[in-house]
Amino acid sequence: MTDYSNEPDFREIPFSEHGIARSHISNAALKVTDALQNAGYKAYVVGGGPRDLLLKRAPKDFDIGTSATPEQVRKVFPRARLIGRRFRLAHVRFGREIIEVATFRGTSDDGDRSVAGSGRVLRDNVFGNEAEDAIRRDFTINALMYDPSNQTLRDYTNGYHDIQQRCLRLIGDPEERYREDPVRMLRAIRFKTKLDLKIDSATDQPIREMAECLVNIPAARLLDELLKLMMGGAAWPTFQALVEYELWESLFPGLIRQPETPPALVEHALKNTDQRVRNDQPVTPGFLFAALFWPALQLEMQNNKAQRPIMDQLAYAAERVFSRYTNNVSIHRRFSTMAKEIWMMQPRFERRRGKRAMRLLGEKRFRAAYDFLLLRVHEEPELADSIDWWTRVQDVAEEERRAMVFGHSKPKHQQPRKRTSSKQSKPGKDNPLPASSQQS
Ligand code: ATP
Ligand code: MG
Image (cartoon, rainbow, N blue to C red; front, top):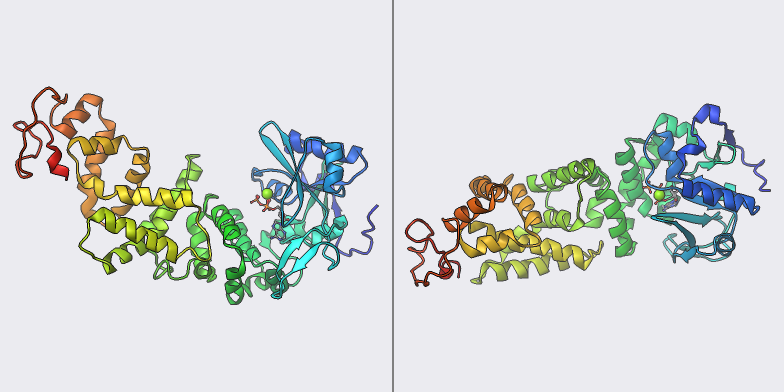
């Protein structure tokens, strides 16, 4: 048994006080805690699960903390997969649900722990007891442990009180905790905005000064954190908070000229993303990056007005902005590719007639590119006409669509093609066929 008698702050909070019933936990998570406890180990629901339940929110998932080592977890669940580099974890799958099982971690400097010169913890596989595991967590509200067998909450950090006060407080000395892992600054912003909490002043105060520590974090991890920040339904308030806390410039230095008052297109893109999350519509990071990098793309285009076709200019500028502004946060190729596809489709909206317009309607990325066109009108009001047309042409029946695009309801393929000059080639009554030369 862990001796927690020397943990002055430890409190066991009964069901009658906190009200979280065993039935609030997923069956898969209960199977894991029950089986581990029956095998003689400690096992609790930890982290975001109990926190979100106390805040009356639906938890995203249930993580388990246990005294069993990953190998011991695998003895209890032979199909568990051991994963992770920075931290070793076991994943136990039940149908679609994956339960993450982490062994209690300690904070001592011996064992498998590696710290950089800056104080940043690079690898942390020191196992510890349950009290140590609670204390090494980031915020007090994330350190509660729920025992489904007796429906009690185990609180080593006064997290229950902080949840009641809606206060986000780092465990331990804030500067030291940010130095160990600067990503905690981003997590602070995420929990503040997502859960509508107030950041405690000692936790708040060092962030601006330490914001630049983020540049030492591997770019792939920053992408993961950024996606959690932006895809969680609070992208706009999160962006504003990142700017306010001077973290934005550590992620994307120079990308947006005056991030305090970003271009309307950026603001609307972030707000739309939040709206879509609320409506349970899909959101894709590629679209968001298309918006965030658009102002830089425009500047790049202005500064490099070469005598080249617009598509070449666009492709060149797109390469330049992605290589220039992704030093700190790496952007997966699939996201930058989607952003480029959206951008490259924008000039194509200028043509509302002919086969090319019809082909644009059938493109895989049409909908995303059209949604992007809708955003652009906030800065380019002259696009309104074009938007009306592209909106209508999607809504109407097939026959009318053909009439809108070709000027008649059926393409007369049989009719011999006439070469016409571009002036004459506007589709209409007298010239029903779109001349292919029109678009070249
Ligand atoms: P979410 O609901 O967004 O998943 P979460 O609190 O569960 O929030 P996770 O990233 O899933 O966040 O982490 C699970 C738990 O692991 C956290 O609640 C916290 O206790 C601990 N944790 C995660 N990241 C850190 C960190 N950088 N430093 C210390 N503890 C951390
Ligand atoms: Mg979680």
